[in-house]
Length: 156
Image (cartoon, rainbow, N blue to C red; front, side, top):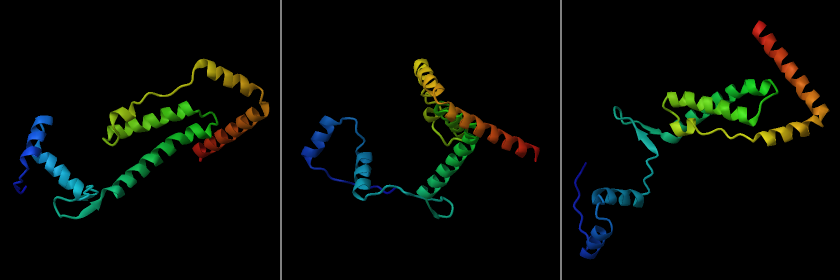
């Protein structure tokens, strides 16, 4: 890394030492220059050949793979007709834990607490839905149809 000497007015130096006595002046100058140059480091460079790679492109590929993994994992929940938002959160967390094992998802994200409604809210929803037999018949018929399709796929 090249060395650069810089001069500061005495009053700036005094203020800096008084207000930020432990600051790394070299790092502070580097950050200020990078900010002035609008350098966002949005390009990665191969250390062997010097080829540039757009990290947004790499990121979008990984996000797409994560989305596909989550969508695939949710398929069983959807096809049974009995999927819940809580169940979807659990599936998402399971996929995040797998990705954490690959080093691609932060531990905090993979272990975030699952949101769950209280028992009284679940009971109120269940009682409300008891008054809608047509809806339940439709859901049961759709679930039975999906289970039959899954069995046919397993046999084939």
